Structures are given as C-alpha cells and as structure tokens.
Image (cartoon, rainbow, N blue to C red):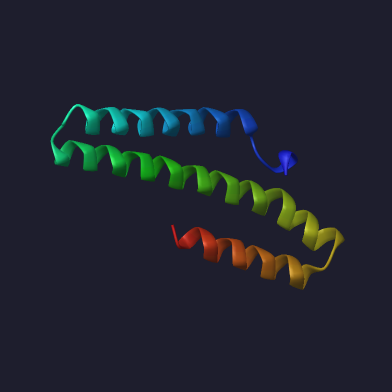
Length: 90
C-alpha cells in the first residue's frame, strides 16, 4: 500500500481536511450563517474527494499494474472495478 502513493502528499491533504472540519465545528459554535457553513462543508467534501482520486490513481499505477503483470489479471481488474464503484458513491 505504501509503495503506491505519495504518503507525504496524502498526509498534508488529510491535515488540511482535518483543519476544515474543525473550522466548520467552530463556525457552528459561533453561529455563522448557514450558507457559509455549507460552503465550507462543500470545500471539505471536495478536498476529501481529491484525496480519494490520489489514492485511486496510486492504486491503478502500482497495485493494478503489478497485479496484471504478475498475478491474476481478471481478479485484479475486478477488484479495481469494485474500488472505482465504491469511490464513485462518494
């Protein structure tokens, strides 16, 4: 798993999302207008989606490629299709 993704990049992105979530919580406590909270929720959701894209891309470029080259190609492709299906539900 570690081989297929840029962990530093992912950690930075996750810390950013964590900060966004904490900011949303503070906004709720401070009675910030709902529209502003919704904007921040959407920003956090978009950032989290991008993290999923980075993970999926790393999975494709490393795990799927390796599985096809050295393993069961049909199972590898089926597993990747399942991962894409889960990701698309976000």
